[in-house]
Amino acid sequence: MYLWLALAIAAEVTGTLSLRAAEGFSRLGPSLLVVLGYGVAFFALSKALSGGVPVGIAYGIWAAAGVAAIAIIGAVFLSEPLSWVQVGGIGLVIAGVLALELGGTHGA
Image 1 (spheres, rainbow, N blue to C red):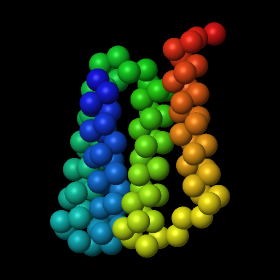
Image 2 (cartoon, rainbow, N blue to C red):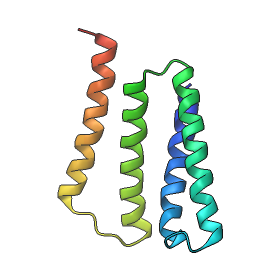
Image 3 (cartoon, rainbow, N blue to C red):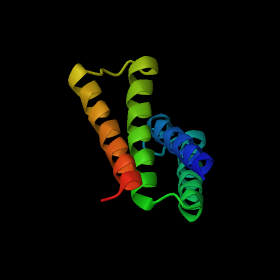
């Protein structure tokens, strides 16, 4: 089930990166990658959910991992700026997802 979630993250990151290359959907190849990436992402996310991953945990991990990956890829490969405040924000998002996960396993 978590393999489906990993696939959903990878596909969403691929789709998001392709958005930039699609240039407002004016380029066919990258535009098709956007549609395919998001289609695979939602399919894989639905499989992870039907496999028993709680929706709050699955969506939290999917969103946090996607945000972190896109920000890091943008900084490293696309020369986009990434400030220490933004890095801290990414850390807080990841900490929030961890809190959701740990809170769910230790229940109130």
